Each structure stands twice: as C-alpha cells, then as structure tokens.
Length: 317
Image (cartoon, rainbow, N blue to C red; front, side, top):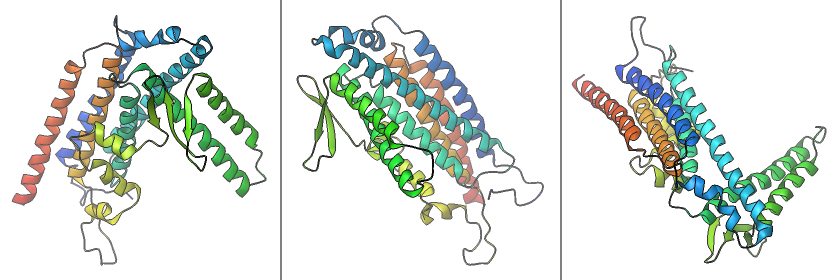
C-alpha cells in the first residue's frame, strides 16, 4: 500500500521532491568519485603499499595466501559498494514515483548504511595490513559457515531438491585452509565455537561476530538512533509504523499518509552513507575527500532547511 495525494489536485510535499533531487545528485557523485579514486591510486597510498605487502611476509609459505585474502577483502568492498549504490538508486526511484512510499525508503536506507559502515571498516586508513587481512577473513569465514548451515537446513526441509551439502562444505574448507595457511589463528571457546581470529606479533584480533549496531553507530555519530529507527520498520514495530496514521487507529477504514519529515531524514542519512564511502575510498587510494564531502554536506544542509520549513508550516497550520 502506498500513500497517494488526498485529492486529485494535491502535489507531493516540497520536502519530498527536494530530498529526491538531492539523493539523485548524490548518487551520481558517489559513482563518479569512487570510480575516480580507485582507478587512479596516488603514489604512497595504502592501496599501493598493501598491494606489495605480501612480499615482505617472513614465512614464504604464507605469502600467496595473504595476498589472496587481501584481494578478497577488496573484492568484498567492491561488492558491498554495488549493494550500497543499488539501494540508493532504489530509494531515489521509489521517492520519484507518482505515489509516495510509506515505509520502504527507510528499509532501503538501512541497507545502504550497513554497507557504508562495512566499507569504512574494511578500508579504514587507520587499520594495519594485518588488521585488514583479519577484516577480510572474518566475513569470508562467516559466509562460508553460514552457507553450510543454510544448505543443511534446506536439505532437511526439502529433501527432494537436487542440492548437496558436499559443495558447501568444500567451499567452507577451502576458506579455512586459506585462512590457516596465511598464518591466521582461529580461536574457539570451550564449546568449539569460533570467537575471534588472530594474527601478527604483537597479536591483533578481530571478533568473529561483527556488531552491526555498534559499527553503524561508530560511523554515523551524527545520526544517533537512526539505525534503530529503520529497525522499527524492518521489524514492523508500532512505534515506527504509526507515524503514517492520519485517522483514528480505531476506525474501520484506516487512513495513512506519507511521513514527509521521515523521508527527509532518511535521505540525509543516505547522503551520510555516501560521504562515508567516498571518504573511505579517497583515503585508501590517496586522494583528498574534503572537496566532494563539502558538496555533499551542502546537499544535506539544503534538506535541513526544507525540514525546518515543513515543521514551521505544520505548527502554523
């Protein structure tokens, strides 16, 4: 169900149209600048340093495996970038449609925020080479283990399907071998459950279970509670769904309308996600992110002006 104007002559709130325009501009900027950064690494940047990092590993037998993990970490960041771009594009599409979405823009924004936080975590310019290897190894192992678990569950429920557990197990074992041959230690608890991965001297560690709520809070400090708000939509919690109610919730015919300020807030958060990605890519490939970040901030400020005007109009009304 989507929200439509209450009468034939009604138009979308200015806040919604301006937010949609700003998001479309930001999406194009994100695609353009990230491609520019990655295709032109600057002398002395982290990318160029780490590209050769495997060559100085003391144990020759570990070198190729560390190189493979590093490459897979970059591949994961590119795939995550594609996911962020896809969801930002989808957000712009639903906001530019004739009818206005009630909730889905929040869900789409949540995915973009998670992806942006993961990219910033993977490409963190403050992380060491060993830390980056661990941050690549953890999601690869989690994914491989999860595939085994999912395949087993599907086979138990649908034994007639033409799938086998052998392939998932072989893929999981290949990931385990790469991690172990790279010199990374997999630490398990007394119940043989993986708790963390360790590497180096002094030892660096990364937890096996990444706390996404904490990660998003770290990279979105100016948007406190935004991740929990989008969670409210994902889990259909009444405290978030109720923002669209325009009639008494007790009447037989429920009237719903778009949450215009919620759309504005979602777009400013989406622009934050774009800024985080551009900043991470710029620093990792040796570029200055400040000029493009400044333009993105101006887009956010423009939306904030329309948000304030919307609230003033509501009070005046």
